[in-house]
Image (cartoon, rainbow, N blue to C red; front, side, top):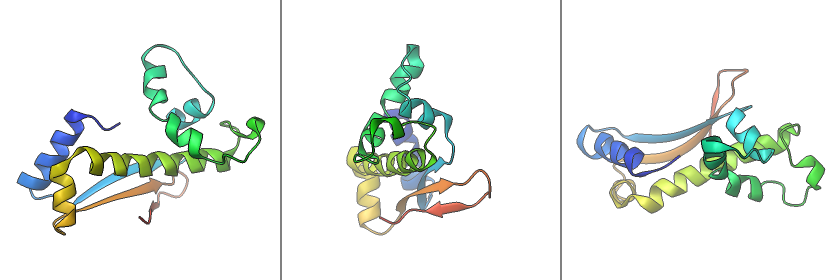
Length: 126
């Protein structure tokens, strides 16, 4: 989730403390993503999962409704990647400081997916 608190912390770490990389990292078999895929909605959890909805909506739009849920590993994987990409774009869109640092070549903003079964991180291409 990208909000002003997160952006402020990232801006400080890059502009003041000298960090060179902002990495939005998702992971395989993510429970939050799986809940969003299944339309879980209650209390504050529902609010959080609603933020993942754009990635759910964008993943496998041609698939039948019965395949667009957490039991479909390919669907969940696409939602994880989509959610990471949306996070990267949200940082660029909502932080002039970070976007300008990236445009100047001072930092990189990237996304990746951590595979919990192998321990490896796949960096996503822009």
